[in-house]
Length: 440
Image 1 (cartoon, rainbow, N blue to C red):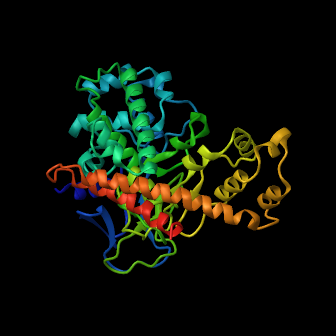
Image 2: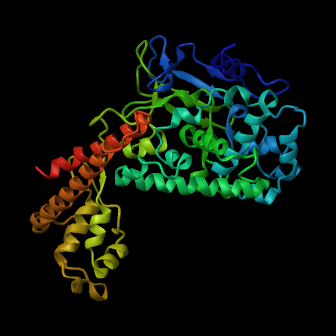
Image 3: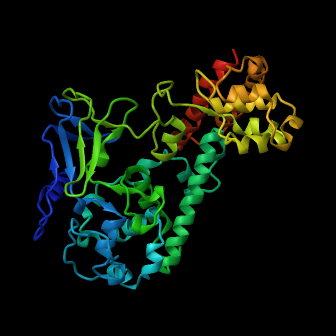
């Protein structure tokens, strides 16, 4: 039986000996494995607005709570008092070398793990359990690392000396470095927890990278109980079949998480015609974010959420007095520009630059700047100088991007790194599409 059919068969069966509901997947949906977009969900016939599409019970959702429910089968110390496991089915399973690891886990240390750390650890071990794992039908349809090779930080994980990595556009490189650091931190924490040597085959870095990427690219928002004392970043779950739905800029399906039913998806405000793809909206994200987090970008100039970060250039021009004032007013940093406008934060910082540093001493603020910040004026007094400064910054950014593109063209790899080359090129083209609007 093909793996997609096994997944649906697994989801479609009511859990033996359990009162939990079974999954529901509309017969109007079909899964396609597209070489460009990966696994996707399409309407096999017309779908009306607000039509129920998918319901996945809690027993099939992989998250902090369901993992604790499963682990507590072998380690009673992981059964947290006050958490509701009633909607989560845990089957009887035979012991093996991996359940022996579960038995030895120290509860306090496990409960201190982040969702990324716990879910990634659990995925690695459950994948190794093969047919013995309750989650095998789901694990079998998760993407392989090679399918996510457009995500830049993975290049550095595989090869710290990767020739293309340092050529990325600054904003993409910055986010990728943050991901790289977070991934390594999570891996080290998990190795310490399990007593795993990075050189052995229990929790290898390639295995952990696969699991970590599955979390990062497939997670859906779900609030965890406050009793677990987790951060906002921990509030996620993996949901089989639902994770085949891709991102769209505009209209999309709506979701709800029901205590009794589980993860519920309907068509929202959209009518889907036959053979059209069904979408979610992951949020207001530019291509820089999407390529780093999910491994894809939209076609050039299509994503109206694209922006460039001017922060390094503006911050470098600010005096200490400027910075102290802007920090006090919650306007320090995060200076951006889209194709059509500067953010208000950016306009305030540029206006601040035009005031003498001494005018901010003793908590003071120039009257015209305060009026602008409070929306009493449009800041026309600052406009000419601000425009000149922005053009100067954009011209410098254009020069830097052109140099990186030339360096990219000078890298000879015999066509072995097509994806890396495309991502680097596009990261700069996205920036240049915005920069050109300010350097005409």
